[in-house]
Length: 391
Image (tube, rainbow, N blue to C red; front, top):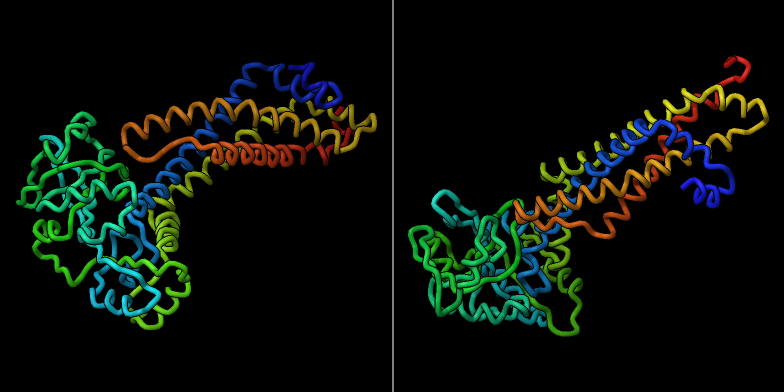
């Protein structure tokens, strides 16, 4: 390694030699940097799981525009929308079709001591064009009363049980004092607000929840005519529909708005954001302590170099060399440890947690920057030192 660094730097790797001279201290420093990386990776991973699980329900639908109540910040929150507004929207020539959507929560007893909270989604059977193309064949099985598709990624679910489900071999359960036939599965995944998802026809939802009214869906989905502008149609709808009680957005914008809401306004997203900041601060403090101690231990040697005429840029390069070594050698153990933690969290919680290349690159360059900042701060003592006062 010494020879390799000498070739890369074009000089003797003094920083590397100083760090490795005290192997115990070097190992401790690397462990500290790796620990800080693990903190950041885990917090970013959970933030990614939050944003990923937020968008999962949107993947169920194939729509252009979403009409929601004005207090709606997510698909599962907010008031109801009068169905008459769908008829108003359909009066526009640029709107091709529309459908109401009914969303609520139900409990499913997976085992004697285990209950899963499911997000229930109901759609009219004739609204098959509003379902993602990959899921349309399964939706046809919901024409039988009280039939449902269960999320095979439901938290706490059993893979063998899900594999047995079919229209010919349904599983019958009781929900809200009503029998429900599970006739198939779909793959969406658990989130922070629900353990999984359950899809039924709107008529089955009304039988499961008698208090619900077909005239008051949770959202209205619209599709525009081929060639029509989605944004222009949204603007027209915002003018003809009451904007004090309704929120009209493109379907993609609704997903982006919910992501922003979950990460910046909900407590979970704010906590993960602060956790990431704490991890960064821990890394900066650890590296600063290591480099500051190194400067203090070799202050006389540095003063000798300073008396010989070496300028501040030389000393800064030495400290930056040490900072980059700590960043690089501490990053990879932290990344491997974080990937193991991701796998464990995903297995236990069902959340979409995984190590992505973009996240690894972001943490790596963030580690380099944090260590560089620590190095710059650590050299302040040396910059103001007078060689004559050090002997």
